[in-house]
Each structure stands twice: as structure tokens, then as C-alpha cells.
Image (cartoon, rainbow, N blue to C red; front, side, top):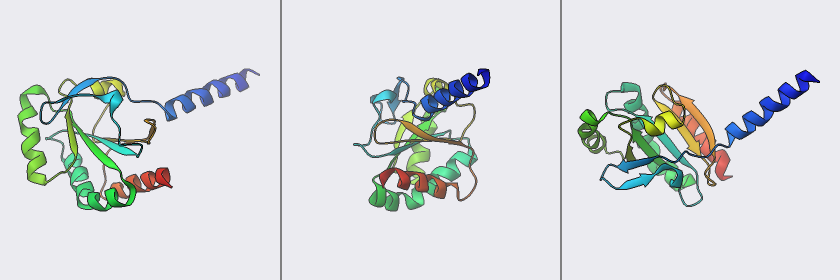
Length: 161
């Protein structure tokens, strides 16, 4: 009986964790507009949140790899990518030039105190989250290896079937 209770508690915890909502943190976008993270959406379609920093080479490789296929992804699934910079305040002025130089067409948010990152329990970057059309976090992944973006679009495709 005790084993059953422990398993039941674990199952409930996993179910809660699997469909967690985004925490409420107030950030600014790259143009200075205030954005609440719990209000992020994509008109009922899935979206990807990618945590990065200007100094993080794997993060930049991942965002560049996604950028190469982003138009096709949007056309096929309607997915949107939101890139969240965790650069500290003294480096925040490097974010827009990096985004512009790479031609990234993402919504870019600034998290200079890592409030959003911390609220999600993220320890290291790059870190990617997929949020379904109802605002539930349905996938999390940290680290980047070449080709990992294929897994991302597969997860998104499963959501839009």
C-alpha cells in the first residue's frame, strides 16, 4: 500500500509538472516594452522559448540553426520563437546587435536578473521550452548539439496535428 501511495504521488507530481504554466515575471522586450511572461502566447498555437546569452556559443549556434528553418516552421506549424537573453545589465547592450547581425526574426526578451530563468528552475543554458496553444509547458530541453532543432520541430508538429 505504501508503495502504491508513493507511486500515486509521483504520478500526480509528474502530471502537474508536465502541464505547468509559465510563471508571472515582468520583463522588457528588446525595444523596451514591458512584457509579462505568464501572458506570452501565439494565438492558440505552440511557441518555443529559448534561453540564451550573447557569450554562450552553443546558444548562438542553436538560435542560428533555428533561424535557417524558421520561415518553413512558421509556414508549416505557425510556431513562434521567443528568445530570452539572460545577459546581465552591463552586457544587455550587446543583445540587439547580436540579434540584428544574425538576422534573427524572433521576439527577444531581456532577463538581466535571471528572474524568469530562476522561476522556471533553469540551471544552465541553452535551455528550450515548448509551450502548447493552451499555455502549458509540454517540453523542456537543455544543451545543444548540431541537429537538435529537428527534435524541436517534431515536438511542435505533434502539437498541431
